[in-house]
Amino acid sequence: MRERDMTRRQVLGIGGALGLMAATGLSASAALARRPSITGAESRSALPLPPPFQVPLPIPSVLAPVSTSGGTDRYAITQREASMEILPGIRTPLWTYEGTFPGPTIESRRGRPITVTHRNELPVPTVVHLHGGRTPAASDGYPTDLVLPEGWPETAMHTGHGMHDPRAVVTKLTRDYTFPLDQRPTLLWYHDHRMDFTAPAIWRGLAGLHIVRDDAEDALGLPTGPRELPLMIADRTFAADGSLAYPALDPTLRERPGVTDPYLAGVLGDVILVNGAPWPVHEADAARYRLRILNASNARHYELEAVTDDGHRLDLVQIGADQGLLAAPVTHRALPIAPAERYDVIIDFSGVAIGSRVRVVNRLGSGRTRDVMAFRIARNATDDSRIPRTLSDDLPAWRRSDAVRVREFSFRTGRMRGGHGWLIGGLPFDPSRSDVTASLGDVEVWRLIADVHHPVHLHLVGFRVLSRGGRPPLPHDAGLKDTVSLRPGESVEIITRFDGYRGRYLFHCHNAEHEDMGMMANLEII
Ligand SMILES: [Cu+2]
Image (cartoon, rainbow, N blue to C red; front, side):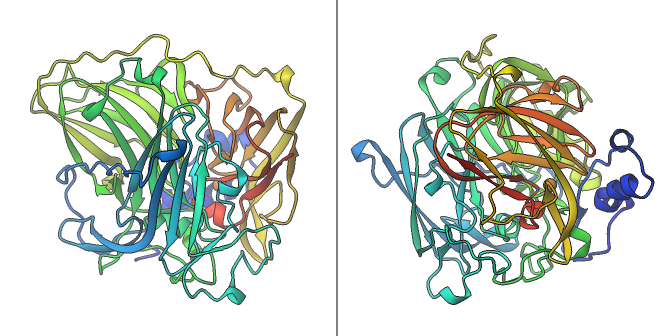
């Protein structure tokens, strides 16, 4: 990896935005006006990259339950090393769920609990978190609730810079995670959440999709079957030997967390993968498609648009957010998506010439990272799908006046244990510290303030965006969210109700490098 090979624009990620605000004394709003498009640094692959739109879009296989008796679906997933062909003709060693990247998709029904038995055959401890799940704390994947691999010395048990966490529940080799899934239907994803090492673990392949459905959504008449496509977008960089290149201080990911200097604000890859394939192409009917988009990148933001060969932009009709269906569709020409956010989008290819292409591009990318994937419109087809004007009527309508308190949190860079860190309210994560204690059932307003880009994620609950930069939310803030993208210098207010389960949860930045470098805090529901 040529670490210094960055454009000036990419360097702006940390040095630029922070320097702009600190050195010149610019106000947050002035920094906002000169907002850099990227937080992080892009690393370069050391082997030739394939041309775009050649590799077919893979669809992750749906995992079959090992049992469906007793009112619970039971699944088994082995976490193990595997090698896959990602770049044509190149083998890439990965850390996987069940031997594939993305891991197998779990399809479940609202209110029907599932138990997933994870077996850790990787060389390091792991933790599974179901992102967006309303999950009891014992199965939520708290970062110190490690599953130790065979032979891992317990004396060397690493819970983060040697921190001791007396509440950690550590298991050997396997752990059962139980998910009640008593929640709105939506696209969730599961990924590793190990203390200090989440970013490299996800980068190596520990991520998979989980779709929750219910009868009401099934009855809407949305595109379905082969016209419903999950799209997990993630950037990666490849080393000369075909392995994934990640600038870890400790490449074994056993002892020392963190990344090398130019990547402290985030690791960006130069290859855009969708469902694990580089810049793939999908043969589509000239009909409506439902795209269920996840940004599973560690730090890269996208602003997606769909462009035909003759330069027309197709509407992206958003029908859902992180936590399920909107009240009514929202039409976008371009859709910003931060790490861990999901959008449920209808795109209509019926007016596109047969044989031509629709490219999905990232307006924030440049060069090869501007392309994401393409659809080749292969054939005419009948289409009896529809987009109802009313999609759902069960969105929470919390009002400011319902809130029993307002909290404020800054998300900023700072010093941590003598080095560079990312801090919430001026503090790096400490499992043993109490940060937020909320009573079950309480409605609260949180004001979140950023220096650079920080996609902020709350475990357990969905929330609504109340304001952005002192103004009404943007069109893509609609619906129920679990991750909100703070842009440089911006403040965002969210409102939520802490219900579901009591216990110890988290909120954190979902720039995975920030998360590993301190940007998490405890959320205790009592
Ligand atoms: Cu962050």
